[in-house]
Length: 248
Image 1 (cartoon, helix red, strand yellow):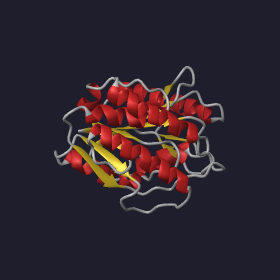
Image 2 (cartoon, helix red, strand yellow):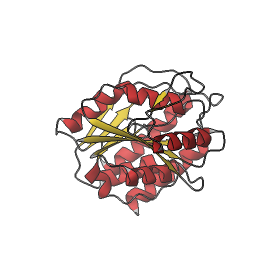
Image 3 (cartoon, one colour):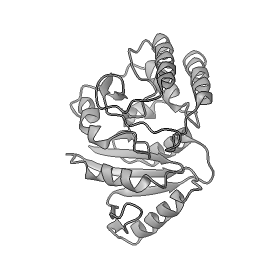
Image 4 (cartoon, one colour):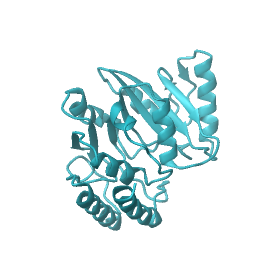
């Protein structure tokens, strides 16, 4: 089996090199590829990725050391460029369409999620017991502590999602999600931005997939450090839960 790690990236110049290095460093027993989708970044992320794309095309094995001072391995890396900024959901749809693996794993481009959790996330699928795996930040694992009201909002959205999908999840909004390819092949995704999480959860809840949830570590950023999600996205998530469960 082959694993496709899909990384949607928008204005992550300070972390994109490090997250790819960390993904590459994981000692997995299955073949992997990394599909980076640039969502029309404007902070220099696109320049870095365009340089990677040129080096990959010329057959180079690693990119020159950037801000981190350490070369980035380019084996199995592919870079996709969106023509205009559309949001995380649209970038993921593009990445899923371009991916070649039988297993697809969503990896955010920041450093909030730790690729060392991959063995735990992949185990239910590799063992043949699961079709979909959700990470959870509230069920164990090392956590950076801040933003109580984010926790309250997330718990409330997860509760509403669980009530409508009849799935007993603890962290519907967690960015770590893993799918067998046939799961996504049977779902038509529409959300362009952060509505991806409630949408894909609602549509998985309508199927007969075997869903697992595993604890992961979480090192959340502050807004000063680059966190992008706001209370407006919470309102949109609420509407997405209702729309994609009851109407779509």
